[in-house]
Each structure stands twice: as C-alpha cells, then as structure tokens.
Amino acid sequence: MGPRIQEGRKKGKALGAAVRAQLGAIRSLARDLNAESRPIRGSGATDADGAHFAGQRDEIRPAAQAVVEATLSAPYPKVSDDAAQRFNALADQAPLHYVAGLWRPEDAGQHFITIGGGHAVLQRSATPQGVWVALLADFLINPQRDRLRRCPVCGRWFVDATRNRSARRCSRKCTIVWSNAQRDQKAQTPIRRKREGRR
Ligand SMILES: [Zn+2]
Image 1 (cartoon, rainbow, N blue to C red):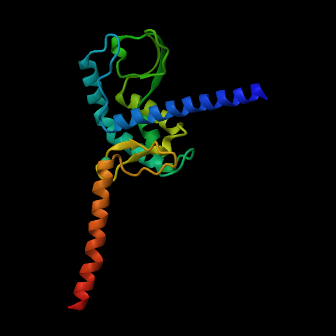
Image 2 (image 1 turned 120 degrees about the vertical axis):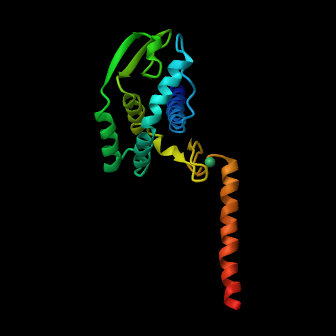
C-alpha cells in the first residue's frame, strides 16, 4: 500500500509541474500577443537584438492573433478549419530547422527548445513568421490552451488560471468597469421605457 500511495503522490506532483509549464507557455504567448515581451536576455543578447526582433514580430502579430482567435473557437484538442487554414498560411512562409549547440548572440529571438548551461536546441527560421509559427504550434498542442482569453474590456490577452475556468476579464479593474457598464445599461433601458410609456 505504502509505495502505491507514494507513487500516486509523485504522479500528482509531476502532473502539477506539467500543468504549470503549460500555463507558463500560454502566459508567455499572451505577452507576445500583447506586445509586452521584454527584450530577450541571455549571454551576448543585446537590447538591439531584442528590439530588432520585436519589430519583426510586430508585422506578423495580427495574423498570429487571428490564428489564436480561430483556435479558441473550438475546444482542445479540436482544430477548426479556419484555424488550420490561417496557421498553414503562416507556416507556408516559415521554413523551420533545428540547430543544437552553444547559444550565440544572433540566436536571440529564436524559439528555444532548451538545454541550459549555455547550450541550446533551437528552432531557427530565416523569417519572422517562423518564430510565431513555432509559438503557435506549441499553443495548438497545449492542453491548457482554452485558458487563453482576450479581455472584452481592454483587449489584453490573459490566462485564466482559475480552477473552474471562470475568469472573463483580465483584472479586477476591468471587471469593475464591466459590471458598472452592465449596471448602467440595466438601469437605463427599462426605466426609460417605462417612463416613456407613461407619457
Ligand atoms: Zn482587461
């Protein structure tokens, strides 16, 4: 009995770590979609590399956002025809290849698969579309992807980390703005009609 319980615990811990990693990946994508990504840090990466790369990414951002929106129209693991078409159109222009070895400054902004200690496996692309496609491919296969949302009040992308997936606005501030607007709408429409009806 003892070992089994421990096994279960380990499994639970591993699952928790996997979910955290999946949520982390979506948070990172949300920052990219919001154009809030920080300059890439790492040995040798300069601010200019980061800025240059961010600039390149900006041109593709609307197309990437459209892929995400189309993806969210169907729950994981389904990929809608619209999402597939948009993703494939981006991917067509974005040949990717794998590179392993020491990380170099010119790798700033490429998509890392990882290793650490100055070494990396990268998905490298000659075009800015390539890095977006790598990020979007990760998003498509992410079991937590349905937690990515766009705030209807301020338009920011955010991750719903609530247990029952109930978050609809990005912040308390936006929820207050939203509920005030709802209240004003409710308060205005019926009363005016009543008053108008009496006259
Ligand atoms: Zn918001």
